[in-house]
Length: 451
Image (cartoon, rainbow, N blue to C red; front, side, top):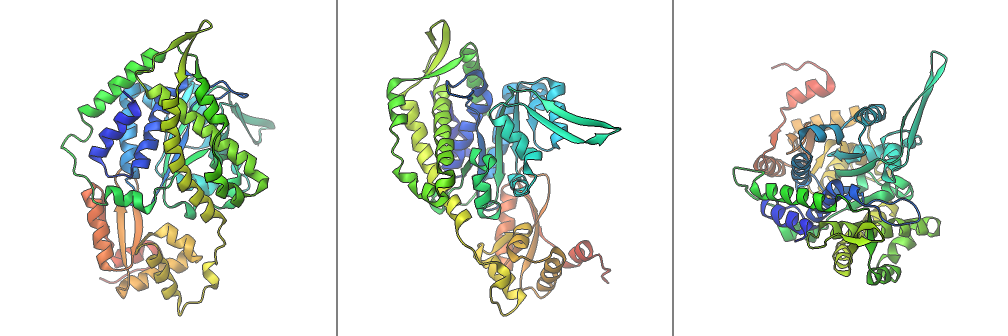
């Protein structure tokens, strides 16, 4: 039995998330539960830890549902005490480093349902000083030292030692909102497995939520957790993975034609780094398939316990990898495509420009994304949106999506789009309603409104 296949089978019954998104979270689960047990023989220390980002428009990608399921599996696998020690969802770099040191943990799991905000940090010149810089170091288990300005005449610093095993699972909206060519060239983004489902992936699964049984997290998931624990005990004494000769040949003779487009787009400057990063991801995915295969028993090799990576493991990983990479190359294309800034596009009015942006995004757009694409000041855009809502040329919705802690503002091109969005959120057990414009005026513009 393959535990990734089992995860996919269970989640398919409970969510209409795209299959590629379900599969990549399955890889992440194996990486976060079994991966820290083994080393991959390589020129530099290598572990099968992965950083995963699922990108899709709001409400239809089921990103929050997948993260919810994954967190519950992790919670049940490790238990509440260990889970709280090692799971990081929010926090400053200093707070995370302090907690890692206080807990004396050797592995950590990062989960973010707003990964876009982290990617926005990477745009900054001093990005290496932030959380993305820390995650960059943890990806290879390197030590991390952060220095602060002098305090009481002394230079303060914080540090974590090398050897911590880290995984990351995040969700974000469409990649073009956050990723540009400079970010693709930087290390952190290249470390991400960015899964960006295509239109046909959504159509294949359908857009309507799958109604669940009353017990949302049921015995099928408990069975998966039980099998993960059993597999952990089987692999506890394993030190290394060993690639079988046939697999080595397949890796050394990879047909790279299907990703030349991406290399050509990136140019010679970073082509080698790009290829190295992607090949490394394929190695890790193959190892995770081997760890997830419960029929793949540990073997003795030169006084060591090893686990073999066989052709069947590589082939399954490669099948996923090619589909993932097709989507990732589109991410690169979007990042490199020349765009016309919104401020120099000719529109009859600013209102027409805003309506055009909303229409191009399917008739519904988060406020933050509209702010980015409109190239307007926040106060200017808020004033315009209130005026448009009062004339009923748009509808404004306040919604908290399933699995999210905070409410967000969404702009719909008409009442029909707003109603459809609200109904989809409510069916998925979220909260959504059309905003009272008078209340929004008070909140946004801080002016009194007569009743």
